[in-house]
Amino acid sequence: MGPFIPVLAAVGGGSAVAGGITLATAAAGAYSAVQTHEAGQEARAEAKQAAVREADAARGEEIERRRALMRVLSSRAAKAGADGVTTDGSIGAITRRDIRDNRNDLLTSTVNTQARQRALRSQGNSAARAATARAANSLLDSAKSVYKARG
Image (cartoon, rainbow, N blue to C red; front, side, top):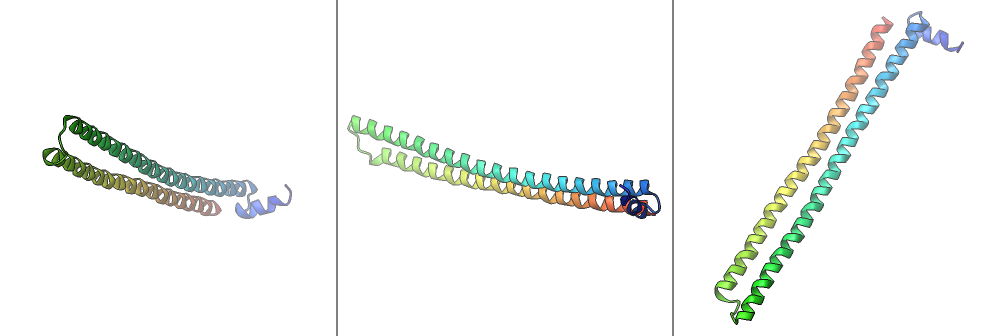
């Protein structure tokens, strides 16, 4: 501890105690800045994961929507066949309308999913930028405290 006292006294303007407090303030500010920055990076990573989960859920919904359409179309075709009705005319028109409606629903769902993914990613990037700004502010506050302590 002996060799550090002159260093602390030099930092503290002649007082080793003041130098120790000054260094502790600087270290606490640096630690706080690092923790703040890491929290922002974690928020960004969580938002990216949420966007991936959103895409996975959308794919699952798309698969289920297509399965439901196929069940309806198959059931309709089987009933028409059992009744001896051809799939031309009104049954064919209804089938084409169902397919068109399903395609439109899929396009709408895709657009909505992409918008939610962009929003989540943007949210994560904003959180990371805000955390970086808070970290820089913390460092500046620490530097200001050290400067004031040095007199």
